[in-house]
Length: 77
Image (cartoon, rainbow, N blue to C red; front, side, top):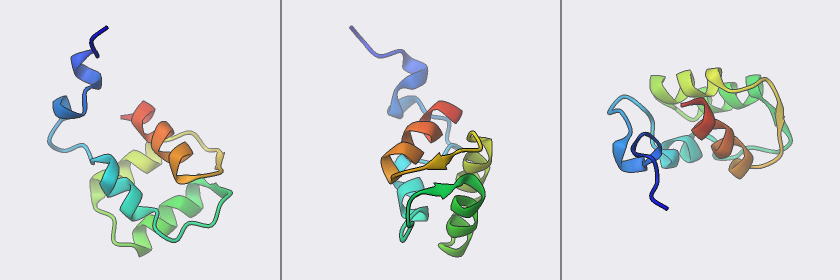
C-alpha cells in the first residue's frame, strides 16, 4: 500500500523541520522529559524557529526517548 503524499517525507512543506533537525535539537536529553524541558533544551541547542514551533504543538506529556518525541512531532506536523 502506498503512503499518502501528505505523510511522505518528500512532500513536507519547505518550512517544516526535518526529523534530523529535531533529533539534533534533542541532543543531550535526559529522559523522561516533559514538553517544556524539551523546548528549553532545543533552545539551548540552537534549534531554529520551525523546530521550536513544532515542539510547542506537541502534547504536554513526559517523553521517555528521542523516538517518542519524534513520533509525537510527526503527528503534530
